[in-house]
Length: 199
Image (cartoon, rainbow, N blue to C red; front, side, top):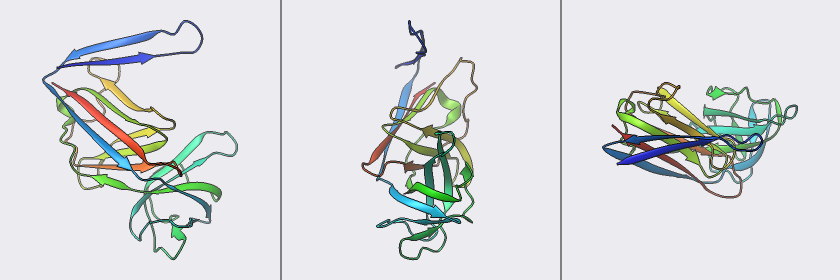
């Protein structure tokens, strides 16, 4: 089986590209569909989101745009506190990523978890994890405690790409036991696609 990773850099013209072709024994592929997130506001660590479906103790991600720089920000793997109506406490929920804003408009997304990606990092020759819109995907080597890869998509088609023999070390070597995915869109579902070419 053949896998080809193509990278293109466009700053001006012409647009240079690099191709890395590998021959493998097979492949692993998984799609993870995530429901839309919810438009919300945050104040003092509490998120208010009308109509949300988040429950107490659920993992969530919070997405926003930095008011000063205009850059996309996110905090993920946050444990929701005791939910009361439209209010979801997140300020004491830990997690990783950017520091939560003290106030303002945000998007909150409950986790979508799958446990059926049969992939061991040490057996990969190529890896691609991408989303069809803004979101985040996190791979674990266990049931949600040991994170081995975080893939960010700040826009459609973004994510993580790796190829054996390139200048970047393999992103992980362990076996994937769990995938957590989040959607930063408030209008449509999103799909993460994870594909690996095997040695």
